[in-house]
Image (cartoon, rainbow, N blue to C red; front, side):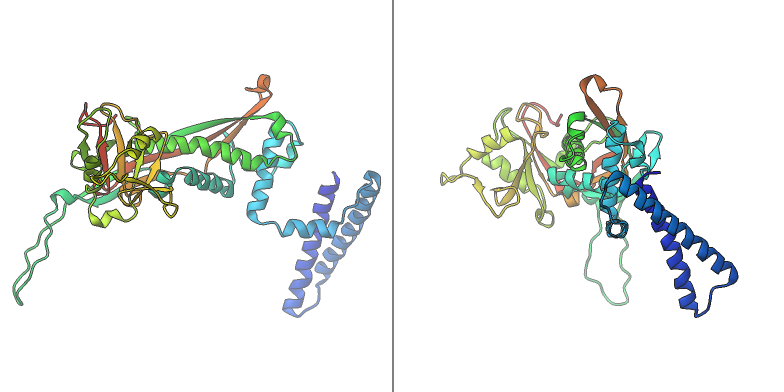
Length: 390
């Protein structure tokens, strides 16, 4: 048993003694004979541990206060304890510290379960990297989630004036559903053992950043382009919500104006343009009839630029401005997009697989799905050459 373990055991006994004395004070009574015997036994064990702790401290020539250490540990937040535990787990699996350091991590068949606070940090970081994913409506549930919505295109509900004592005519709205399932997705991040062994490195932040960056790229691609048989994202925009450019390689100002007007006024607030950086360059050169550029620098806008008064977000995951591609999206993600994720990620630390690279692998697993939940809140400009996006 090392010094830390001795201190932890001593402090546990002290807490038991405090609980016993607190109980009799609250109940305004004396110890029973049995309680008195137990209390004296705890006192003797604490005295013995105090002596052992002092002996170990003298032997190891350490200056350490048991009371101060206990107080510091007790003031740690859940997040701080989770971060310390996760860092210890990574370093222990890399063979850089004792295995016992990660003993409070919850193990699973795939390795260890990331504490919820760490998983939330990863998801929060993903949202910082990918505003499109951040702004979508999120659902954190297991299994299939069915989201009901009204078929607005065929809705015949109407309000009309009525006459007293005359029955209203009943009409029904057709309800449809969008089903979100959980498609398994994994991410692998390799970390240098030299970095892990560097005590100055915030290993948890480093891992969070690397995993979050990979997840953000994946989520954004699936939200914009989708994958057949998996998350479809914006790839299923209805024909009523798309316009086709006259050219396969160029966009006009009139087409962008028409695209923006595809969304009704109720969905304009919170909507913005999404396009690839190369597409933005082409749009940047467009001018109106008075030779004024359509795209404007705007430090008050979230993304630093506005087009027709709306923010412009650029993504490398957005399809290029080539034949048949949906090159520009105009979306209100909060109203139009639904994303299902599981925030409780499983993690596995691979120590042998990348040993020849002097690295460890960190694998994260989650479930994800993304679909359009309201066609009226999304629109796309498709380049000539095809009637649908890739």
